Image (cartoon, rainbow, N blue to C red; front, side):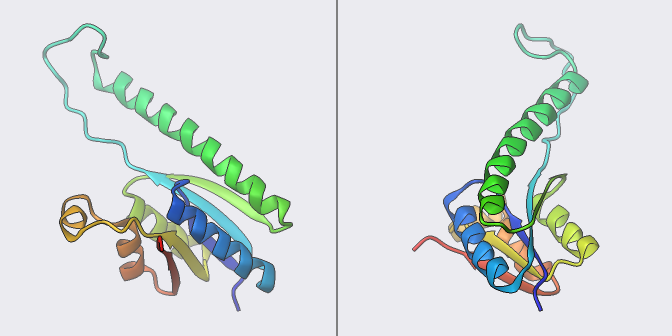
Length: 152
């Protein structure tokens, strides 16, 4: 029986489709939805040159990126959670830091999630090679049910 559904959410079209499908399943099964977004901060190397208008050290850059990433994702998750709550479905939100695929799979395992719903970005093989695919990583590493929403 499905009691916990994780939706990997980034506010893209496919993520919205995954959320809609998860909401339908949750409505029918009485499940709780876990809305999760994940981000990875870039590696920033210390520069010996300070350019005007650019932060002079890694700490300031990383703090700026982290705060802005979290602020943006919190807004995105709040809007999605309001939609889920309006349908009288229990919802939890979480922002994870780290490689999105790995962070989501680890969260799934820790929370005992029964179903993962994620959108596919329909990248070409070349783009997947260079950029990776969160949905493919989740599909390959989650030990359970995975729903992948695609554009039609």
